[in-house]
Image 1 (spheres, one colour):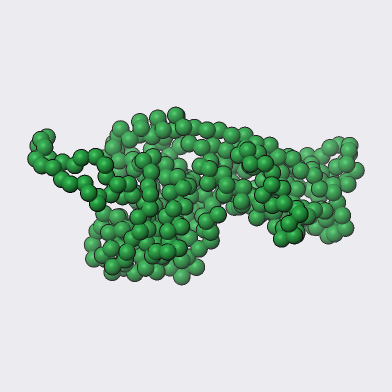
Image 2: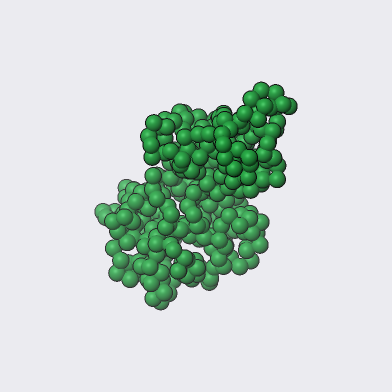
Length: 379
């Protein structure tokens, strides 16, 4: 699993995108019912800090679209100024690495992101690209005027990754505009490693690109549903932990880990949707290192595995079955914690509770049960 703890994402979406037509900036136009920018942001779910650079006129729209799930930064007169503003906002915040991505590339895969991030273990800069394989011409007035060699030429993509201190210094010293971040890095003397890009990582630029994007979504959509169920008995104690939230109680839940029965059910639902078994397959209870472990570790791994396979968490529904403690006053906090761990929006996580009308082991207050259902979507 790629460690993302010290890596921030900068998504540049401050342009007007006039070449794409449509009457509004291309990043705000919809593909299959969702804005290009929202799709782009969703591909980086799980990274602890995402900075989205917007045109000053779009800031209120950004707040409405993302609701505090990202940091919004106002862009400048050029892409270079916009990126410089975003990088400056990260300085001194404990960020060591940054991936800079075009807001109009909504189909970047987890594999490309992982390749760029992984290359930064050995280089201060890395970027995805595809070798040019087509013949190249020069032209004027609708006619071919010459032929150009393609040896050694690459088609640049994003995200382009850097050590933050190096690229921030490069941007601060760069005198004018640049085509992309690699140009700024090379002007500062940084070596840039090339990693493999993907044909699907298209940048939406022209009107026809929207039709292509719709076809990509329509032809490749993969929807998975998974269910999870778990039970834990009560034991002596003074609190229970449910969905990552500690609730005072006159008893505790018994388990090998922290016995978060609701989080276990959700984790198993994600593994089930991926046909990856259950928690026990990935974190065997026979392994002493998981004794008393926080269940957030298990859920984070399941969410990461889904992203690695190209899936986004479309929604999750968790039901807790118990007489006590009362869940309702804490349900929103629980949903927020699950959203934080999985990288999903809070509007995609539901936590609710019910009793068993004093019937069965939950009715006798011998333990707590939980059920979860998730839907994963791979666009």
